[in-house]
Length: 82
Image (cartoon, rainbow, N blue to C red; front, top):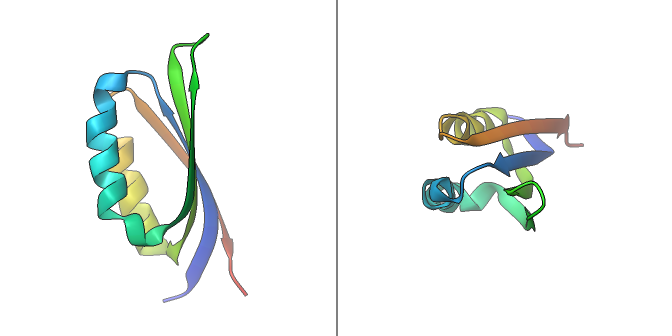
């Protein structure tokens, strides 16, 4: 399967969802090259960006699980690696 390199953006609107999110990120830790999280206090949210490297099925499985968490939004942008 072809590997892809990409960026995943996550917005957490309720910190009560953070435990479930972190469990999923731990489950897929092998895909995550880098992670940055910033609390945006003025808006009452946290924003997380991930750099990922893996096949499309793995990345889609991870983002699909994240997308099912209440009060969490996820978007991804993937490029084919050379």
